[in-house]
Length: 429
Image (tube, rainbow, N blue to C red):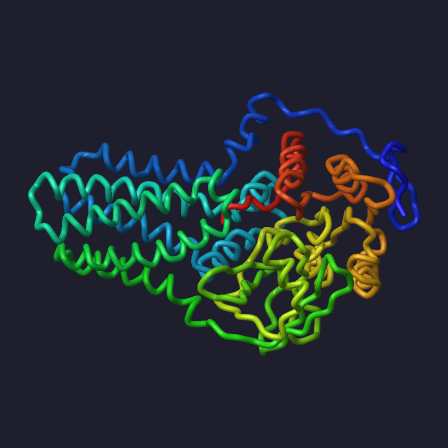
């Protein structure tokens, strides 16, 4: 059991270690590059926008046909980069790099999970191009059906973009999901109508077909499956699935009780050599609370299991996993697989009472030197210092943090501003 934070020490494997003093911040220019506003997600979005500006500045005449193609290509980019097979391909390409490559190169490749910036950039650029196209079509006196569909689509795209902005998305996430889903399907139907009315060529039809197939593919895998639920405490359940699918470690599965209204993704926890997998679901809102209380015998699943942030571990010779509460779920499959030498730092409230002796013993069996901080006894620790101490003592190359948004950003940016590769979710969905 770890001692109070005030003692500036932590216990792992029965040995007490003094918490390390954080190293100094890097130079001002490097710190600026590590600012949240300049994270790779925003850089990718800016790159797409700049590419479109460069295209606009080129020596061409902005006619309705060219504008239409530009809007379609950008919006197809926004759709396709979210497709699960494409996401898994991104991770596979990024993690092919061997650990012999320079750390700076691997550090950058590890940011592959920021690919959502391409989605944002494509969506914004596509919406602007389509607005320009609607204006041109109206001024040129295009037919009433084409103009009407064009402006209806512009209005719909504005609603989708506005509700996807962080202030709305974080406060009304369920509404954001519904607008994005049903609005996206409606927009796709309007794009088909607009393209057919505009009598565009095979290129436009091909782009639309790819985007449509990309959207439809996960839903073609929709099915209702059995689930066995264990509830070690009112705070958490372990949902066990065995419907002929054993996902790879670190992937995630989306589940739902009402497939047309809301979906929730959780990290898959397969056990080596065993079929099926588990999901760790903690009480974090109305949906998870209802799930824990009701313990449904069946749920809907769809799509393809998708790689997550922790899959970048193979880029490094050693990693530190930092988790709080149910953040242990996404870490557990990697700890069990032991593909990369790792050490766990886990801060949670009364772990055995909350998660059960079985799960805690399973973790300690593969991580005997894990630092488990019981917040019910010792309060909330300085997670940045805990992470850095483990990073220093273990000789790790990177830190992967799975926690809530505020603490994840504290750990990731607190370490990166000191020259240490650190990774954590960016809540872009």
